Length: 198
Image (cartoon, rainbow, N blue to C red):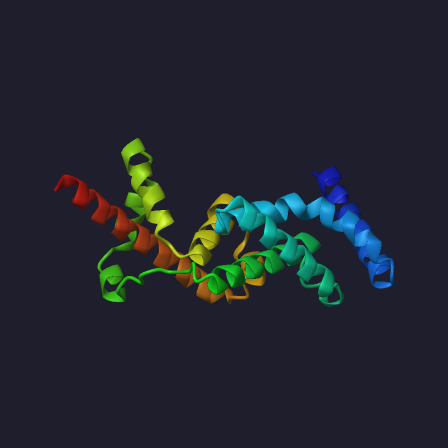
């Protein structure tokens, strides 16, 4: 554990030194820094943008945006990977909005209030193969930013504080939104199951 912590600390110090050199005019070193994180940025962007070509383009845009705003990086607020994830997330969302690909139908809140928390949890924790198919369909019907919130929280196991930094949303909003998403997915699963029985 100590070795892992030491490695993270060393990498952070190396990044800080590299960023300092870039800001002092050795801009060619940004390629070295970007190459360390390009694959991670592409993976994040690809979760929101399914077209490989578009995801690649948005990744390049995100890395360029990071270079252009490097002076605003503050190691006291977030690690460099978290700061870069925030830029990638926002660049991908902007792309989707510009392409008008963020098309969704919001569920009426009164419908969601009719789904008790324990019922939503039971539906979402059921791992039978047929239920997992419905779960995938429910996720695909979410907005891209809600899909990413689920991904950050459940798949990447990121703490709410870090997700708050990346998304620019308050921790309270994110907790509330996660609750809303769980209920929305549970309601979608119930509807899909009802449709299949007809």
